[in-house]
Image 1 (cartoon, helix red, strand yellow):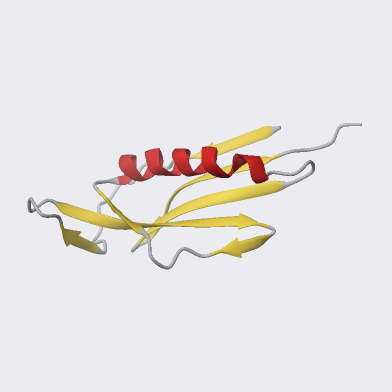
Image 2 (tube, helix red, strand yellow; image 1 turned 120 degrees about the horizontal axis):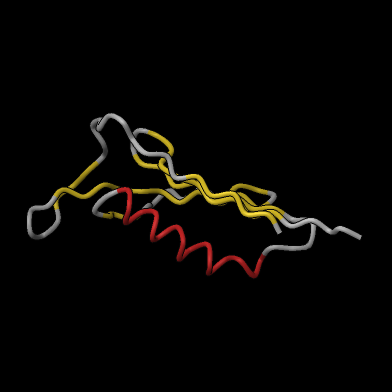
Length: 97
């Protein structure tokens, strides 16, 4: 099984879709797009404090869906915010004999 994890650092902070939590801290809405043959689009998203919190949530989600991986299969989880991709996790399996 090959695992490819990408978590690019942002060099510039741009305006993001955000809202304010109950204590007044700005939060960003992150969307978790899953592709396993067919794409599963997340239209609701989740409000999180920052990119690192979104990465932690992506790792949890990857553990939840790892049992769906078939032999010679592949799935990708991409985390996006209002300005584009934040990070992704790709898991691929190959039958070797």
